[in-house]
Amino acid sequence: MIAVIKGDIMSSRKIQNPEVWLIPLQKLMGKWGEQPKDWELVWGDFFQLEVKNPAESLHKAIQIKILIKSISEPNISKTSSPIDVRMSIGIGEKTYGGARISESNGPAFIHSSEQFDRLKKEKVNLAIQSPWKDMDEEINLYLKLAGIFMDKWSLSSAELMQIIWADPQATQEEVGRKLGIKQNSVSDRFKRANVEELMEIEQIFRKKLQNHLP
Image (cartoon, rainbow, N blue to C red; front, side, top):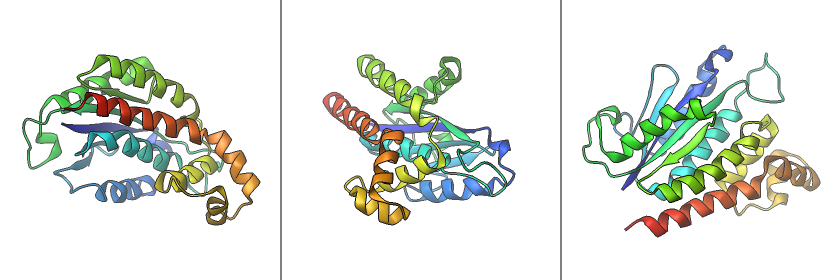
């Protein structure tokens, strides 16, 4: 069993210099695998990523979301990023591995494609599809609710989330030192970013998936 994350960068044309988001995204996915076997970024703003351990797939998808929401340019508003990302996570078997991820096949790839095609229609930016409909229904409800705040993250919230997502054990004092702000300001950002709620959703996903995996 693997997971496949399929996504596209929304409103990417609002960024004058695409390298502002393109290079950081390439570097991030480069940490997780080899291009083009494990991941590809094609057509300018569309990407696919294979995740060997399905339990890590939601964590990686949210990390991509955090990265994109932290993107800005000197000539645009500092309050929020003008771009966002739409992603589907497909979980299942991989029956054929090609030299490029776009050539690989199996239920995981089919699930990610089917769910990706539904995202825009259902007006959500992150959802999963697996062989287990009961899990999909529950997790997708959580992700739909989480999207209410994730889609509205400010640049300061995304900056905070980058630190927390990389080191969940970091204390608010440690986070404050990295951001150069006081502890009470960190606490306010925690609440605005809904850090605890998102971490709970990610942990529930891991537990539900573990109960279904052989």
